[in-house]
Length: 123
Length: 111
Image 1 (cartoon, one colour):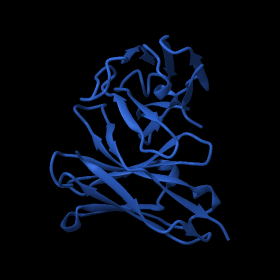
Image 2 (cartoon, chains in turn blue, red; image 1 turned 90 degrees about the horizontal axis):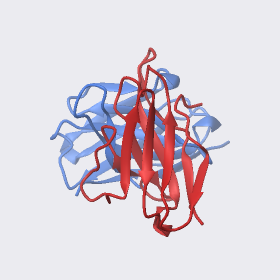
Image 3 (cartoon, rainbow over the protein chains, first blue to last red; image 1 turned 180 degrees about the vertical axis):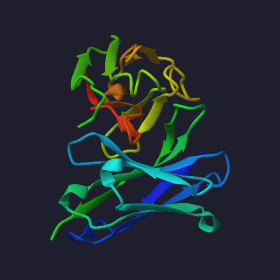
Image 4 (cartoon, rainbow over the protein chains, first blue to last red; image 1 turned 30 degrees about the vertical axis):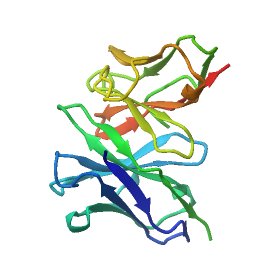
């Protein structure tokens, strides 16, 4: 059973950079062609896809986040990371990491998720 | 604001059946596969349905999914108190630039 666990600072000031890490256990991040993903949930709101990094290193992200998002893989530690620059209060949310899978074109689904970590942006 | 619309809430008594609609358009549901997630606040969301109507191993057959045109539906039969949660649909949206989108979410209440 694959398990994911987010870690990172819970409180940031505006304009700082959010850095989160997702540690994967129960499976290698390099096998099975997964899309290692980040998803967030603003307070009292729904889910928002942030982006993914494919096991090969290519990535894609929500265009609404423009160029603020960077994702990376660390196979040696079986983990992947998210960086979001120039944060504002609008980035306050619970951040989830998840494993994405795709069986065919037009398909992406998230079969394992972390518990989520709350990140608050406040001066 | 999501491009996939769900009813804010649905409710039913234990043992009853509920359905949750997810309405989109030809740039998302109409062209791509839909997945469904159950989320109890404070916990990890759980994949219930993928590829429109497929259940992952370990998911009860009380949960079912379907898709027709630009809408998808999640059905829950034999409603249980443990089913009380938020439910989200999700799929790719191909409006340039493409992005994965989740539905607005539906709160299921067991009366």
